[in-house]
Image 1 (cartoon, rainbow, N blue to C red):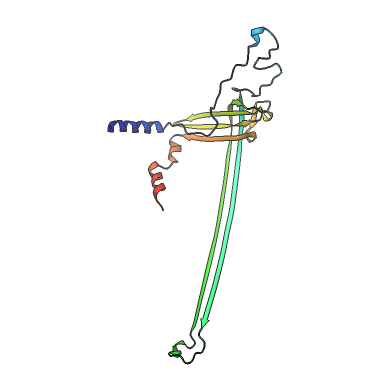
Image 2: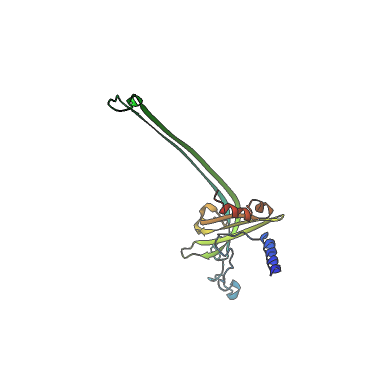
Length: 221
């Protein structure tokens, strides 16, 4: 049993180095085109309503399986600033007037009490973030919605040395925004999900170890 456990652990360690990072883009990330009727050579006619492309039809994507190029130009920036200043002060004083007819009046005569308190609190915070993502990716139409919009999804893998970069994108495209060159800007993609992930030694070095994450979770300080 111990040998089986060691073997399973070794397999997990070896396969962890080549694990594909998870994704949130629409699945599947590609689709095969469906048949669109008989070809032109089937009946010898110049006009065939069942043909995949008509005589005056452009090359913009509109069917399942068609491809288009999305120009990624995402720039996001956000900043916030806050400050707090609270101040509170108070004082109290009391004195014993002239007393007579009491034992020990010499001890109480002219006795005075006073107290003061002050609380100050000030705080300030600043936060800023800026992200820039540019590039091109060709995606595939995986579904044509009832209103004519296109659900697209795609992935690009680039292997450099011992690491692999994954660029993924999915979203809903209005055919009206597709240019004659069959391209569209990412800002015109609805429900866009753009991902850039990588695997390899460099990405693994930026991740905290599982034992350190365990102690960070259970330690109260």
